Length: 257
Image 1 (tube, rainbow, N blue to C red):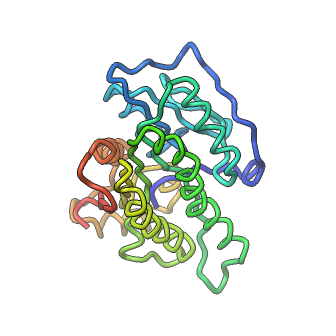
Image 2: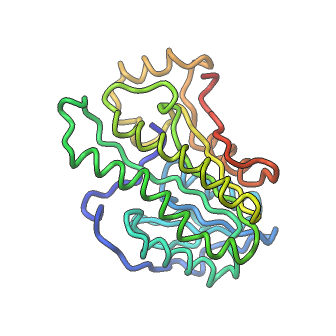
Image 3: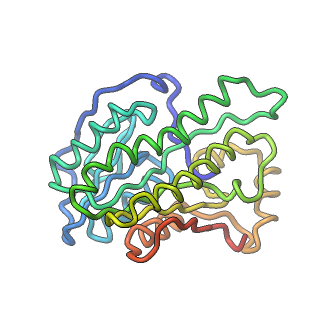
């Protein structure tokens, strides 16, 4: 249960990319660039802010809700390869290159399996699994041309421990981890690194909607005795993006789990 980037009205609509607030985004001072898919809120927004603070020039995708100040906003749909390719093209057009891709968007459609519809299974897999796969495909040509690039995908600690009512979600995130390991091996000799950060329960909009009793149960199961914050997850994502001798790894960030 890490982050959510969900607008039902535009879930399957292919939206043309647009750039906004051109006078409001920040030119980083370290020369490296990053694209955060799902940068409008939660872990994705925190990651965009941390990348800016680290000196990156940052572009971030959203679906109409905007991105943090200083980030080059690009409207994109995670369920559309065409839309994600356009987002990459927009970032490269402005920055000249693309050094880091972070994919932080995702959705939940919770229900016990007996009550879960096939549409709820398919929707979660399309966004949470196919979305990151297509984002990676969209950026590969540019990173291979550069002979360098770092990809960080966001998974979840629920893959390791399981969560009742989230069979679709945990399956979608587990697939992301398996995908990342294979992709890392495919392109390790080409200068590309692919890693996964797996947050535990984190204070996002999605988790704030959980009833207090369930939240207390979550906290009770965390050795550190509290939920994580998007900023704490973002710190690990940015560090992972810059780790030059690590690829195919899954980094757990779960307060001791």
